[in-house]
Each structure stands twice: as structure tokens, then as C-alpha cells.
Image (cartoon, rainbow, N blue to C red):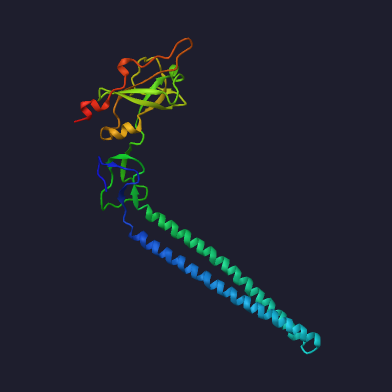
Length: 277
């Protein structure tokens, strides 16, 4: 449904899988649910019949016991009536057990149908987030296996610049601190907020240039750009753009917190020609 470079919204339909086979499986599963429900109805009718036979056997036993006490019925007839009651009770117990089995069969059939329905829902692929299609990895008509990738979407719900602070300074930076970003491609100062400071240090990555090469251990930090700013200039958001991040460290003992220097004052991004062409 989308091409490379397209902007997609959360829950937007981006691809469809052929669902003919799964649709047929769902119809079969629903038919099995209906058959299982019919078995439950039949079992309930069997229980009602068994209960009626049980009532009749008990009544006949009661009458036979009275006749046997008056001497008009033999012991053999009385024993036969007792056997009829026992058989009727056994049939009733068996019918109730069958009902429980059929009810569990309904549960199993419903679960199987729900699983097939879930598979059918999975044939409609939706975007999980606001983003831009970076790569289109499958084309209409292609046969793909389970777990195959169809699209690569860049998540634009969280845009941040990742940078590194020396181990001697990272402890003076708090999550939630205000930050400033100057991108290499735009002569502007962009506001940001520190949202992540790595709990462990690492060696300086080769792709990162540090002011002091003697600092071998650094902490990875993320400065996130406000989402409302991203929404305003979403057509210009790109991955992999380099820039410089500035943060204010907590003042040391005996020193006061300083303001941002004039060159890091926030710019009116709407006045930049590159964003208004």
C-alpha cells in the first residue's frame, strides 16, 4: 500500500497478505464450533431423558417395596426394580460426564477458531507508529515466509541525537536536563531534552571524535527533540544526520549554574530559508 519515502501514521494499513486459505480455515473452525454446540444440546437432551428414566425407576421401586411388604410382590421383582434404579443412575452419570466433555469440546473449538481469526487479522499489516518508509522489501505477488520483512519504517515518534560524554563528566548530567543541538546541515539551534544516560561506560567509538583523545571511557547519552517540533518539520527529518549536542553539567561546589551562551540561543526555525522553500 505504500512506497519508499511515504509517511505513515499509526495503525495505517501498509500491506495485505492473501487470506483465501485462512478464510477457508476460519469457516471450517466456525463450523466445528457449531457442531460442538449441537453436541452439547444433544447431551443436555440425553440428560433430561436419563433423569426422566431415573424418576420412573425410583417410582417403580417405591411401589414394588410397598407391594413386597404386603406380600403381593416377590423379592425377585424388588431386586429387579433396584437394578433398574442403579442402571438409570449410571446412565444419568454418564450423560452428565458426556455433557462436560462436549462443553470442553466447545471451548477447544472456540479457541481454535480464535487462533485462526487472529491469523486472519495478521494478514493486514499496519504501521505500529508514526514513521517514514525507508525500504520496501517485498513487492505485490511475492511469496513470503512467516517472519519475513515487508517494510522498513523509520520511527519518527522519538527523534534523538546520540552522543558521548567522558566518564569524568557524565555523573554531572541528569535525565531530563535541557540540551541544545546544532546540526551540520542546518545553521540553527534545536531544543532537546536528555532522555537517556547509559548506566555503564564504554570505550570511545571509532566514529566519534572527542575533544580530549585521552578520555577512553565515555557514557552514551540521548537528547530527544520535542515531538511537536518533529511534527512541524517532519518532512525534513532524516536518520544519520550528524550534529553537535550541548548540555549543561551540574555545577561543582562553589560555582553557580550559568546560562546558555548567546551562540546557543534558540532560533526561530520557521525563519530558516531551508525549511521554507
